[in-house]
Length: 397
Image 1 (cartoon, one colour):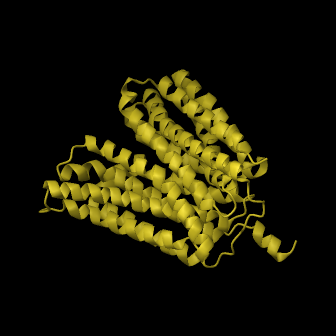
Image 2 (cartoon, one colour):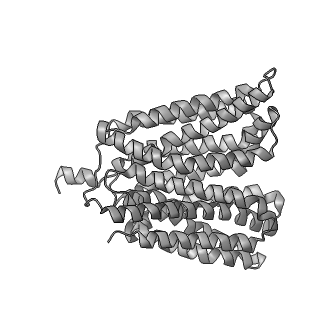
Image 3 (cartoon, rainbow, N blue to C red):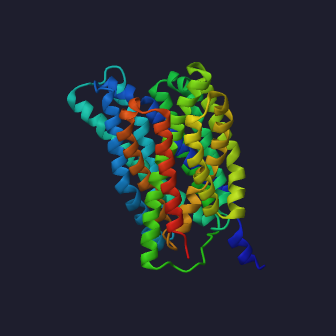
């Protein structure tokens, strides 16, 4: 094997870890934002109920912006050989606005109607800035790893995201105790620092290009449409399982006092399982791993909801282990369905679908009080069935 072939098959781990750091910082920024959103709105005289409306508006904007940003970053890449203009502008804007948002609620700040409008505008501007850099950044995974090795490289992304998810149940009160200025300022600093670290290590990577032929226009449209469906389905399933089903089951089995501790354990288990999921996907193909994971989780979710309490611990652990195949599989899926040189568009379509799924979830959430755990599990199973269908119909021939 010559050096060029060897280079094209390797994973550039320093760059992948840098990308994981930026992706984790993105997740931490959203976590911090969600922790403080209701309190920030209340501080300027906006009702807590508006928070759900604002999140819905942000999701609907992302439905349009994610594909547009991905498409724009692809054009920039072809013209300039880099996606960094989007990443630099997005991270600087997002970091600056996030750090500035708490200034609106400092003692003595105005709470008039004009200030409320400025606050809402700043919150929407921040969510749009976050949209600008994530898709171009994750498209760099195609530069740091061959398509065959993408499931293994994606381990860094999925483990980082799962570990950040543990902070909501484990450290929510601790993070809030610092106040909005310190909490959001820290999130802003982590975001900018991680982007800077990725920029430094990115320059040392040799681009890994896919050699398979460009798909036909019809195939590309089908695969991109399938990415939208897959993003929406996985987004709904994730929120239903980790935001609704498992918390309900945990409370029923262990009581409300232990809910946060058990949920922390759930996300730690997910993080521990993701490396195995990546190597399984490398061995059986990412499509195969996704289909097995989504199919079995679709069966287990209703079983968990209907199972007696003594069996829920075992079934829940198995469900989380299987879900790691889904959590680790989205990035390789986006890369494999995107036409050559259009990785940004592939990720943009996936995340646009995920934003659409979030909007649908936000519409459903106010009604979940009348839903049972069984209802939630069946919705999750239906979403996972859509994910399986999207993977199947878009498979390269």
